[in-house]
Each structure stands twice: as structure tokens, then as C-alpha cells.
Length: 454
Ligand code: SAH
Ligand code: SF4
Ligand code: F3S
Image 1 (cartoon, rainbow, N blue to C red):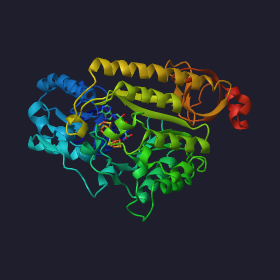
Image 2: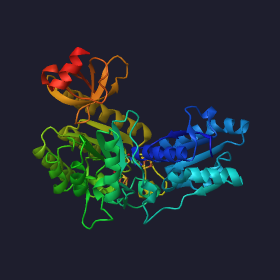
Image 3: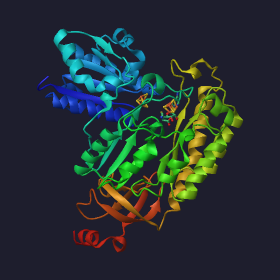
């Protein structure tokens, strides 16, 4: 494997991003190097997502483009990893003759070994067995994101909820939690390397149960991590509304690093749709939890996921969804059109909403939310927030950072601010971000000196 060049393209959620980082780290450990162009690679890895049909199609289209490369260089190894790999298994080898290795999400960290076997023995194969007791595949030394300030830590994987539309429990398997000892070690290691913000990752983080400590659940993990030196910001994604316990709500506002933001997918505002989705809560239960959270931390940012056009969703159901959005006033929403996924319960339901109507509902929902996001951001004008500066803004002319509520702030300032926590006053609230000014008068003396003199 020494000297081989690999290229990874990642689709899907942060879980996949994290898996790709882990795979890359192992490949580098085996002497490989990463390249940014598929044409220069000896190993091509596509880490796939199958949450919606479109995500799956993107992976197939990229693999289609790799066919010409393989024709030119038959010694190339092409790997399909991730959730489509798990869903399709060996069928992928028949369907795409230029694919060499099919590797489910539980085997991504073994990619080096699998590629070696395929190259040495000239074999094509699928590795899609699922782990049930072991979490060894999730162990990792801790990898900071590119600018070294933020990192994800996978605390659990899989899901036992079986929402009727969702493939995740099938492709990622049942819930498995990592030992708290190794999580704390990983976090400590990251903080020693200068990471300031840690996001705990899992399909349902609230279901976390430490296998190495009796009765140690997610709130206990948050408390333990909050005590680590150097941790300024702690986040998590995603927690399920039905498992948002009073104990977890209490963590907000009492654990200093825990940021005032929660991503809490509602999916629909209609009780009958929620039931058909098997979400395990009603709209009023959801609203009560949000109100308990806001009682505790009034400025908490709440974001959500919504699905429109679920099988059986009538116009009144959709109106209920709009009403719920207007009631909660989310800071932002990821919204999707319902997509039938193979093997799920909802795939057997009769589709009642035509594609055009699904799209219409999506656009209506997004327009309603756009207005709310804008109003909420405008309401912040004149306020000053602590911003962690992540680097230069998209246009390269300003700085970009985030508030604790996870809002993007662009502002002007002198050189060398990356990695600093600075007070920034919001000058203008836009739909997806804030524009601000460095608030020298709020800065601690060290920051003031540095920013004004530079
Ligand atoms: N584990 C997380 C998120 C899972 S996937 C959770 O439960 O909150 C991210 C989002 O994709 C979901 O919240 C849902 O809104 C959307 N999604 C999942 N399956 C879908 C499908 N079949 N069609 C459309 N959207 C879907
Ligand atoms: Fe999918 Fe539901 Fe599990 Fe989220 S909670 S991963 S939507 S089954
Ligand atoms: Fe997609 Fe798999 Fe994540 S289906 S959303 S990559 S868990």
C-alpha cells in the first residue's frame, strides 16, 4: 500500500464525513497519500448516502464517471462505501462491473486492508456484515476539522427508532454506544491539540448508554465532558424529540460549554402524519418540550428537519405543519420532499401526493421559514455575541465565525483572528447569516490590543 494515492468523495451526513476522515487516517497510517483529483488516484472511494433517492443517484452518477478512468487504468481500485453499499451489498458488484470493493459503514475503517486484499488477490467482493456488540470500528484518535478548531466525536451509531420512512436503522444497524472512557480520552486528546469546539455525533445521541459505566447516560456524558480543560463549546446532533428528557433540558444553561442551540427534527406538524411516520410523539408533546427548553434558556436557537408530501399527507396536515413552524419560529429548517426508500415501512404505503404537489408544498414551507429566519436574525441587530472566528468569509474579504447559537457572522477585522473568541455586534440580520462589527469596547484587554493594533 506504501505510496498509493487515494481520493475520497463523501455524500450524506456528518457521520459519513467522520467515517471518511477515519478511513483516510488509517490509509495514511498504511503509507498512502490523499489526492484531490480522481485522475491522480490509485484508490477511488465513494462514501455514499441513501437517505433519499437523489442522494443515492448522486453516488451512481459519480461512479459512472469513474468508468472511463478504470478503462484507462485497470489497476485502479474502486470502492463503494457507506449506506448505499450496505443497502445494495453484492448486487452492486453485478450492477457496476468496474467496482472492486463494496464496504458497509461498519467496515469503513478497514478500507486499507480491504483494498490490499482486492489488489493482491485480484478479487472483487462485498463486506457488509453488521457489528452488533463491538464498537471497535468507531474508535479513533480524534481528528480535528481542517482549521483545527472544531472536531466531531462519534459517541454512538445506529438507530432503534424505525421511523417508517427512514433507511438509517437498516443501513447503520441498531444503536451501539462507545465506552465513556474512550470518549473522554478522545476529547482530551483533541483539546490538547488546540480544538475549542466539540460536536458529539450520533443518529440519536440521547440514546447514549455507556457500556463501561452502569447508568451513565447522555446528560452524564455532557457533564463529564464539560469539566474538561480547554473545552469552550460543546454541541451535539441529533437528538430525538421523544427522548429529550427533563434532565437533558436542565443541562442547558447549567453546563457552561454547552451551546444554546438544539437541532430537534419535528418532521411534521400533523399528529396523524407523525403517527404514520412512527415518530413516537405528538405535536403538543414537541411544543411542550420546546417551551420547557425556552423557559430555561430563552435565547436558545432551535433548528429542525421537516418532510413534506409523506404518503397520506392531506392539505390539512400540511397546514398543521405550517402552523407548527409559525408557532415554534425555528431559527432554520432543513426541509425535504418525502422519498420512498427500499425496505422501509412507508415504501409499502400508497403514495397520495403527486410529485408536483410535493414540490409546491416544499416551496410554500420554505417561503414561510425564510421570512421567520429573516425576522429572527433582524431582531438580533444591535446585540453583541461571542464569536469563534473560523477563518475568512466566503468572499474572502471578511472574517467568518459562529455564535454559540450556531449562527454564521461575517465581519471585518485585522489580520490573524482565526481561532479567537471575539465580541461581535450584529449590524444586519440576513436570512442565513449575520453581518457584524468587531466590538472592541466589549473585548477583553488582550483582544482589544491585538485587534486594534494589527
Ligand atoms: N437521526 C436523525 C436524522 C436522520 S436523517 C434524526 O432522526 O433526527 C436526516 C433527515 O432526513 C431526517 O430528519 C428527515 O427529515 C430526512 N429524511 C429521512 N428519510 C427521509 C425520506 N425517506 N424522505 C425524505 N426525507 C427523509
Ligand atoms: Fe431515521 Fe428516525 Fe432513526 Fe432519525 S430517529 S435515524 S429519522 S429512524
Ligand atoms: Fe445518509 Fe447514511 Fe447518513 S443514509 S444521512 S449517510 S446515516
